[in-house]
Every structure is written in C-alpha cells, then in structure tokens.
Length: 215
Image (tube, rainbow, N blue to C red; front, side):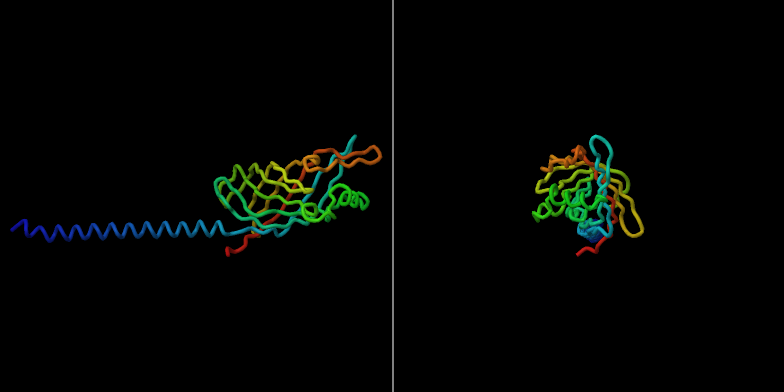
C-alpha cells in the first residue's frame, strides 16, 4: 500500500520536472531569438558620411611640397563582420573637386593625369572592402590598422594605413591616413620645368558619420 501511495507522488514529481525542463528550454529559446534579432539589427545598421575632408600631401622634387584637398567625400558603410571589423559599402571622392591652390595646376591634374573626363572609373576615387584589423565590434573606439581596396584611374589596388575612431554626440569621427604610389594606378608623376611630383603621396581622410536606422 505504501508503494501505491508513493506512485501518484512520483508521477507528480515527474510532471513537475518535465514542466521545469520545458520552461528552461523556452527561456533559452527566447534568449537565443532575442540575441539573434539584436545581432541582425546591429548588422543591418549603416553609417552615412555627413561631412568629410580629404587632404593629400604632395612632395615635390627636388624639394618643397603642396597640399591638394577636397570636401567631396560621400558614402555609406555597414558592419559586415564584428571580429575583426569588416565593413560593406564604399567611400567615394569626386576627383574633379580636388583643389591644389593653383587653377592651372588643377586643370593639368584633372585633364592630363587623373583624366577625369574619361568618365566612370576615372571620375571618382572609391575605397571599399574596408577591414579594421585591431577593431572589435561596432562600438569600437581607438586606433587600428586598416586595409581596403582603392579604385583610382581605372585601376584597383590594395591599400593599408591607420585609423582612429572616436565617438561624438552627432555620430562617429574617423581619421585615417594611408600612402599611395601613383604608378601603381597607371599615373605618371607630373613634371614641369624641372620640378616634379614624387611618386608616393600621403592621403589623410577625416569624416563624421551618422547612424542610419536599420531597414
């Protein structure tokens, strides 16, 4: 009789354990779904360039230098991978807007060397496939090396440099520097009356990007 009396209690205990197991599984499932949704939302978010500044340090031979600049920087980037940070999208510069400070030099640069009138592939510089090797997650702040693919003068080449990312009230501020070699892009260094441009230039890009809502 004692065994018969214990049987209902045993069954009740089994049902309680099963219910507890089901509840735990449900909680875990909800957590997984929520985490996946959060990750998907973060990955879907994009950052649009709100203002930018590009400056190119141009050494001269046998001596001296000048700076070419433009504020015509545009583009939208999105987080494709968090560890390390890989960005989809691209940054573009309208090459016809580059100003060297001298009108004649501007015209020679655009017409004879960059050949912007050839249209697509020549009218813009495009940086894509950006990877921040030391960055970790969308909220990263600090310094990191970076690599990317630069399309310039109809040629695509890998470039590497350094970047500093800082959070601001209006978004994210990025300052990046990287060298380019003109002949890598099929551009002969300009030379006029014994004064020539060095083959290696240094590019500095600074921009503020604001976050766009996920679609």
